[in-house]
Image (cartoon, rainbow, N blue to C red; front, side, top):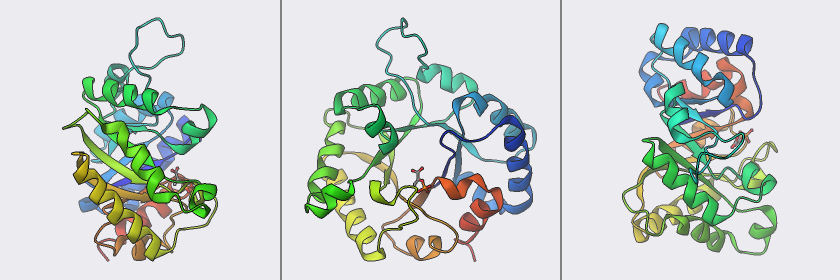
Length: 242
Ligand code: PEP
């Protein structure tokens, strides 16, 4: 899967242009493996254009609130996201873990809320530079995956995103990506996680994508900055077939 994470970027005008360029540039066969995750306020418009132009892309939200109760000012539930046209939702992105102190128990509630609403989850995990340098990468990933305890059969895309590679221009070494992905695959088996796809994320662009995708243990990419340009995003996705 190829996940375009726009983060807090975009506008209605940009969305129209982006989708028009996708129509022009993205190979027809590859479209069903792409998930556009724009800010929540553009999901409805994105969904309408994708359907009208038969573009074949799926839509994901970038976050969901746990359905503790409905008295949560500013809250957006999974069913609201479904209503807007989302099929997927990102949970546990490091930018939210860090900026909003998202704890494991909160993430677990989000995973539950998403699943009850029928959304498929893109769960992000990854170690910080400090943790990597302290030799704790495996331990961190294992702990982050433990959120799935007692949530068996929940189908997930997992995105391995080393925090130090996100938005920094520093792509992880190919051997490091391979080692981490193989470790995650093993752990998902041990923890009975229903893994549908394992994606890498962290400063990927069209120059680095092909080599990363050549690894058998990498099933897709989560792309932030480079996904804002439809032509660049298309180039990355089209490269799997060329
Ligand atoms: C991301 O948004 O998770 C991400 C990997 O961003 P970037 O590609 O810009 O590093």
